[in-house]
Length: 178
Image 1 (tube, one colour):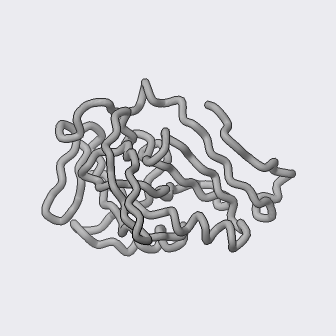
Image 2 (image 1 turned 60 degrees about the vertical axis):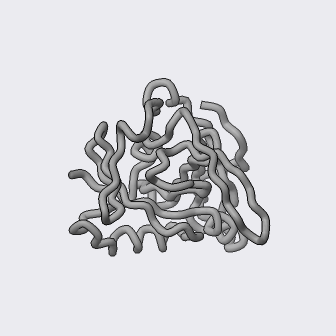
């Protein structure tokens, strides 16, 4: 695992530290799926994506800036397909990462940009960070499918300016076992 960038933590004062860590994940060869997405995933009329390999079902949240709190609230209130949704773990998000990518276009502010999206096309073009669940209530986790498989660890209590910046680039996925 390679460290991309951090500002040091001091003691247990996570809430007062202003930092964002991003890690390259060394799971590519052992966990990532490299086959055709159409073989692994199906999507029903309600938008529920079923992963035939893991048995998990996924529902993609709105493509809009979402805070961790908003993501958690959205997931827990989701009733599509009978409910039972939760936020995904980082391991579950990592397993969605594809070693091949598809090119996606995003239009904003009159500018069209092309991005690589390392996730099955049934999930749409995921440019943003996706919030993950974490048992440590002092840190929120994010995973990116637009970069070469990055994770971010975001402390609770991050300055409002930094948090608003992250919020604009983050969204929610919901997952459940079936």
